[in-house]
Image (cartoon, rainbow over all chains, first blue to last red; front, top):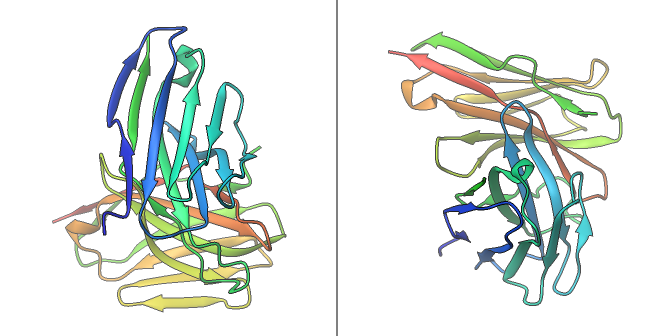
Amino acid sequence: NAGVTQTPKFRVLKTGQSMTLLCAQDMNHEYMYWYRQDPGMGLRLIHYSVGEGTTAKGEVPDGYNVSRLKKQNFLLGLESAAPSQTSVYFCASSSGGLAGGHTDTQYFGPGTRLTVL
Amino acid sequence: DQQVKQNSPSLSVQEGRISILNCDYTNSMFDYFLWYKKYPAEGPTFLISISSIKDKNEDGRFTVFLNKSAKHLSLHIVPSQPGDSAVYFCAARKYNFNKFYFGSGTKLNVKP
């Protein structure tokens, strides 16, 4: 099992350019998440999905869009990149576990380092 | 407004001694707490968790303590090893919501 993979690992964009980050998981997880990590801020949730075809906003959704057309993939799009979006982006997935209550954990990908000039 | 806070950005401990990492939260609706460990250039990996119905959970060298009245949890690592050197994030989840709130992390350095 590859777990959670992210493509690309690094990217440099110019202000105003667009790009899509791809996240894929092979654990048949229902829930998928996109976070950004900035110094001193920890991990902040951008968008998440509770199943194929669904998306929802997290804490910092502005400037990002997402799509979950297939259960195993979760795409994060930047339509017009800004320097404030320079960050490390992490994708995660989890089984959900609401019914199980307290057993759910998230599995993270290795991250994508994005620099916007 | 950060609902989960880790007020110590860094901690340095001698090998073999105890490491204590602290985390505070503000939302009384949180019912499930987790600790993640992160090495440079890797994603966070799950370490240990605790439900709000417990006050302690142990897994080998790692123990998490939860004090609900103080809205405080801590991670104890005994004995600390150089391989434990990493950034540790605490996270919390509200009951019936699958959104996780993360602290800003504490960088642990275990000196040989």
